[in-house]
Amino acid sequence: AQTVTQSQPEMSVQEAETVTLSCTYDTSESDYYLFWYKQPPSRQMILVIRQEAYKQQNATENRFSVNFQKAAKSFSLKISDSQLGDAAMYFCAYRSARPVQGAQKLVFGQGTRLTINP
Amino acid sequence: DAGITQSPRHKVTETGTPVTLRCHQTENHRYMYWYRQDPGHGLRLIHYSYGVKDTDKGEVSDGYSVSRSKTEDFLLTLESATSSQTSVYFCATTHRASGGPNEQFFGPGTRLTVL
Image 1 (tube, rainbow over the protein chains, first blue to last red):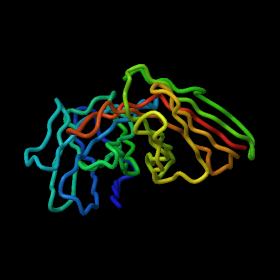
Image 2 (cartoon, rainbow over the protein chains, first blue to last red; image 1 turned 30 degrees about the vertical axis):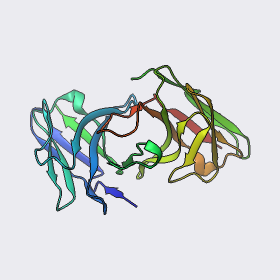
Image 3 (cartoon, helix red, strand yellow; image 1 turned 180 degrees about the vertical axis):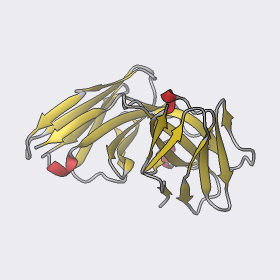
Image 4 (cartoon, rainbow over the protein chains, first blue to last red; image 1 turned 60 degrees about the horizontal axis):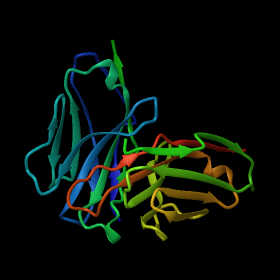
């Protein structure tokens, strides 16, 4: 079974600075997808960024980028120019590229609570 | 947000009572999922559905059952609620079988407290 680990329960950063959230995962599969979700106080789950394991190029979405190290099974999220609206719980998630019955089951990490200091 | 609603949004109940949570979607998505969120555990899959009347167990299915009699509705039932089932429950949907990193859409969540 796949597992996802986020070893930083809480992180804080000064507004406008850069912060990196860590995520490691364990799998025996070679083909899979990785995601970062943001959960603000509203509880809504918002997809931030996604990465295909077969792509060597790291995904980027505006101020959000990932450092995907497949051999090390590491998938960190970098947030540049942090803004107050970035304050949230962030979840790393794994999904197999060969889903059973087509269902795209996500395996989540424990989450990292990010605080932005003004 | 794929038009996903959950009802109720909040519920307080007593140990031993049955509870049913409803997920309703308006996007005609084939796949639906129930997760629970607990501190220190992130979200964990309870059950999922891959079509009408087609369901299967997830990682933490003990004490839960589901039903899907039509595409738009996915019900999660706690036959006899226990305090360990106090949690926030999320419904999610995906449109089609994996052909890429398709986004999974989440509902707003239901906070359930079992006293």
